[in-house]
Image: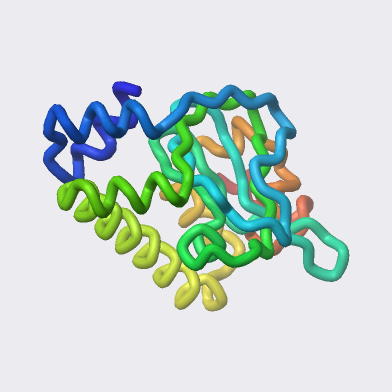
Length: 187
């Protein structure tokens, strides 16, 4: 819980009352590698904070699994569209390692926002951060070479290739595993 509170306090002041409510409403979850936190066509009911482990969001395109994002320690994870609008998700969330997570339900997240303006500020700043990252990726990703995509991935997810299967990385980059191997050999 200490790391979660630190992460929130980077964006807002946590009063003792807010800290108590966060400790009440965020619950500790242990998950094994390959556990699914969310399946496509389900509504994302939870926001998770990654205390330990690696996860990814993925979807299927033409029958192939495509990793759309990776999450590691000290990050928040959900199916963002589904969580914010409470509609069915088009993606899955899978643990790529054994994970220790803290989760909060959408309803409790909204309660914290309403009860504590400081937490509302945190929620706004978190959504702005996610939106900015996704906007940057969506606008530049199509124009980057495979090597540039790999380099950008390393900025956002340092050493991720040491933790997860290269097939997941190749699908995220939109390249074959052979091309990924050539890029990595050239580093």
